[in-house]
Image (cartoon, rainbow, N blue to C red; front, side, top):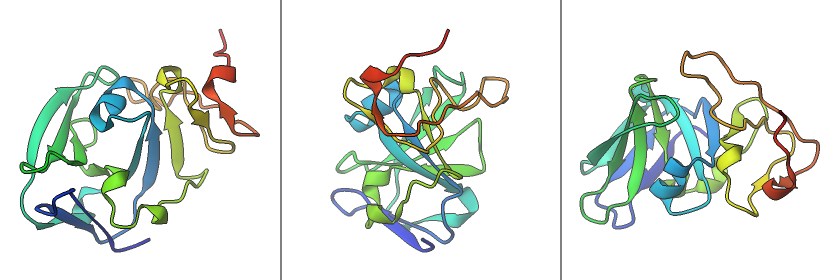
Length: 166
């Protein structure tokens, strides 16, 4: 998966990744729903040192995350408004790529050791929670940085059929 590339809709901004993503997040939070206009965001996350713009420059918008209380910076094309990547006050050495902007998004595989599904509690009706992939009802980490307890399904299940414990 090394050597990932991606771009915005109009092609004015393009990026490259020299290494491979450290992890992939499948996020169903309302922020990601609003940022993508979809039910979830597929977000390969990589070291910032592996990321570089290969064409153009991105504008940015800063938003304070309801989950962490920290700034999230959305980087997008000034011409076509495609959101390309995110950087984080909470993890300043990491970059999250909007999966749909990858030139070949099929190279991102959901591996149970490096993928998490988060904010399942905010998932839109009909969203499928994948089997074998750790899932969290909310964020994978608490505000203090401690990990949340994940659950793992033995079969993929529509979120409407799940019951949150407690």
